[in-house]
Amino acid sequence: MKNTKIIFLLLSFIFFLLASSGSYISIGEFWSNLNVVSLIGFQKLVEYIIPINQFSIWNLIIVPFLKIKVPFLLSVISLIIFIILSIKR
Image (tube, one colour):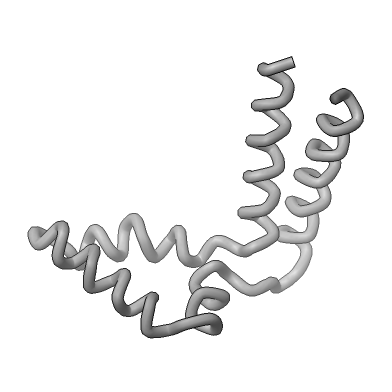
């Protein structure tokens, strides 16, 4: 269990360094490369669920999330797994 925690902590640092050092693809770019129609459908769903000020909700919450680099997201996920393993013992 201790080795697993160390691996996830190292992965977190490695992914963070990768995200800060290079120009990697963002979540939105990755999603649009896979299936752009589903990304457009997600925007329509958000606009349907929150009809009041949907432009500001989309631009203030969703677009910044879609601009996150993939290695940074992997870093955060690895760090969360490390914290869960540390708490769980």
